[in-house]
Length: 257
Figure (cartoon, rainbow, N blue to C red):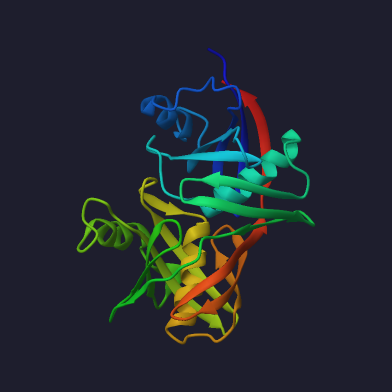
């Protein structure tokens, strides 16, 4: 069977994108999904995303990690599928779609895609780190000498360590550049490696930095290995609402495999 796919990337976080409105792709074939994401034997990507029809929204997003398993929310993936939906003519400059964590809104303007994230009502502030869920679970900790830091080794250790154990957590290491800007490097579960960027991760970092008092700003720029993203939000009691993730989302190529 020949499969037509599109490759998208958002600040280096890359995805195999498939138009599955006709329900021809087998979502239970974990090995095939892992093969397509494999950088040596397949297409190569951090994850695979299916665009499907939805009864009431513009479309549905189904996201799989590179290991072939369906995953929790992917922020950059949500921005990329919005750009893909625009390319397919499903939407114009705005979208409402369903992902695994519920309803999302998105807008396209000046080659940037903004994605509204779910409200965050619970944040755990520990001595060494902050933990919160922005559609996916995230461990956030400040880290000196971030540019030379061994993200893979230490991220993997934390990802599988207590209290995360089997379920695991994404792990973000953060360095403050200014009141309005932070550098971030992320170890992603499911990819099991450092990724060039993580949308739910930078969202978690922005909220965590505001929560622990590292910044009073509510519009924050996050510098990832793959480029810059912006997160804006409003405080709501002990949590956050009206959270938006903004950045580029680009089609790299179309192919058949």
